[in-house]
Length: 273
Length: 234
Image (cartoon, rainbow over all chains, first blue to last red; front, side, top):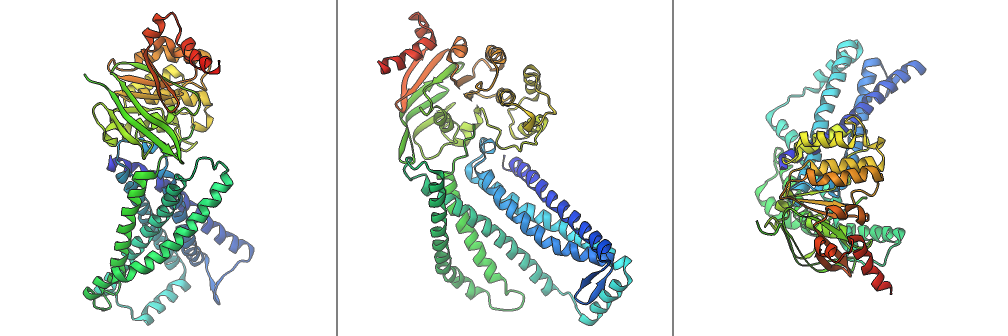
């Protein structure tokens, strides 16, 4: 069931990622066409860019906005799926369900990053192939940089990617934590509070208190998590990121444990008639 | 075979309010049971607890001898509100989802029920009326081959003629050993198919009677049910 639910949620989430990619592509084409039909020029600094380099630049620019948009969409989707009755009826434990949900979002981000990389690569190749000025500029910059990609750089890139994934995961988990814990506290309040605005206000107030507690908790826990790893990882250029990676893993695991407890105990699917 | 559903000392509180208190209920296999009670009596909550949707209850709930929540869900088909699907989803896609996710989902049975309910497979949820949606939910629920069907007010939006047709056919859609627990306000319409009646009142099981016992007293189930509340008013 874990695999089947994973495939179902992943299909559902990549559909949204595809929409974001489509909007990004349309926006990049539209703004390139508009720039050339209205002013006839696109400037980057003092550089007058051709059509293909402009398109490449816009694709690159919109990729950051698209990534942020998709991240926000998946955050919202995660929390909606957590309380979705149609899906919670499936014969799977709540823990596996929650993990399926969070990990499909991470998989969706990975899928999105791959498609983005391909898209940026294609638009770069188009500019490189069909724009002589851009081609020579790139070649000159490359020759000047004397850049040599070695194994150590490769390790740093991989570690950075791992760190990014762990950071994205931690943010998803913290968001769930705030949502679950405030919902759990609300479920203990007297049922006589029926005013939705008042309940909303109480929830926002609780979220602020929880954020404050979270910040204090992270500040207190970081040196505790850091201490054992600091001994192991002596600073060299290739293992600079191992320490933060280890700390992030600790926090991710901690929040997974807390969230699973809260999800199992207090988070009921929404009853919609 | 023993009892299909066994609920012992079930208590559920939410927001400092007791929704269900000390509920004890036992249902055997192959029965059609009405779950009756006023609005807010706790009928839906009881069904949600049986199907592991509601959390933090005290007591024991066993379905087909299983008290583990995941195992329980495997034996139950619950009328879903289809909230998991976007309004753009076609009936065909929902059927596909059920086929992939539920191993006990019978596609041929669904196609037959879909035909019976006159639901087009190409129609989207957004294009369906409340009654059509409920027909779809009933078709999906009965296309799963399970031991216990939980029907939570399944007919409220369906027109009288179709409702009658569906109620008369329900008995044909379930396996002989399967049990149906149905909550509905149209007591007179479902009464002919009932084997037992469970009344939820004052947050607990107030009565659990055989439908034949009620009929033996020359009373219709509706009269009996209404009588309970008339006594209170007097």
